[in-house]
Length: 442
Ligand SMILES: [Fe+2]
Image 1 (spheres, rainbow, N blue to C red):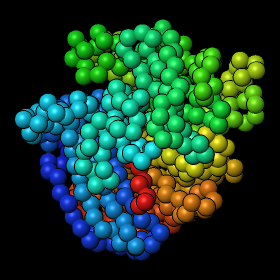
Image 2: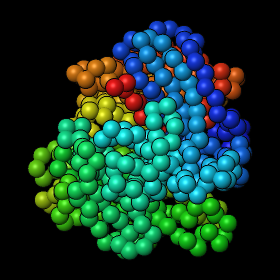
Image 3: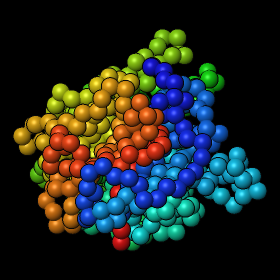
């Protein structure tokens, strides 16, 4: 596996928390863009990473970044570590016992009137749009002990579909929470071993699970690895499909692979489910000595068509683009859709450039990012509640190597190849992170 100097360039941590107001803007911020873009990612509490591969990066403390927009202005930027027990152990030991023992450094969810910072399976942490930590969830008590960082919200019913991988049997729970946060479905799914499930998908009628070739191997911890994850040659990759409100989980075998992120899924008809995802033909595969990972190839856009009646899956690559961190116009989650947005992977060590892929015309638009610079996930914001799919903006954090700072770039969602509508050149870096959310001003 490639190693990086995590302490320099786009991934380098910041050492402090700041608040900046009345940010300079190049171009014109749309007046309809009222709200906060929140980004989440790992930032070591002592300001330096230990180790230099991707698993050393993933496990560090959660830091959230918020850029606020109002009436055509970029009104503020602030960053805060999540106030967890782990944070207090370094910065405020007297407070540690009162704080939640979790590390929600992956994603942010806005659901049922609550904003939650999410980890990959740990307890969610409630916070404000100003990034102040509130503590354990109050609106989602059914999910308080742990949940995926990639639950899915049905935009029509408001339901929240989520899961939790456990390290002991039955290894997987599937949960549905209603639009008010009240738990409904809670299903134990019996698995032969714990799988690395980072994401899931929904359609209007089903939820889809990924039991693929990356799983847990705890013997790796004694060999010096910080996370016990590796490719399993002997595991049969399969997609699990369960009716949304519970019932039989059916498993469909597919070619060996790993999927970190799905793009979207939908019911093509009563017997056919379509799943689009970023697929890797191998991932975290150890070399024969058991101490070093092979190189991960870049991810590609892949389509699975699941034939529920025949019990089969057809799969193929959709487009010849290497991508990660895919997003859609989330008003189309679980429904047929036309556009996807993603960060481009020109090589397996770079996230550089943004693509907008039109599934109807199979055409690509690109926002290009110069060599040396790096960008994060593009977050789509609709122009209005009633605007059509894709009518809105893409918000992207772009790290500029020459100045060691981050630009927040606002792209026209319909035409990302043109110059940005507006750029907010921050005077400092937002370190490369994972995922984020747009919180519209309510
Ligand atoms: Fe993720």
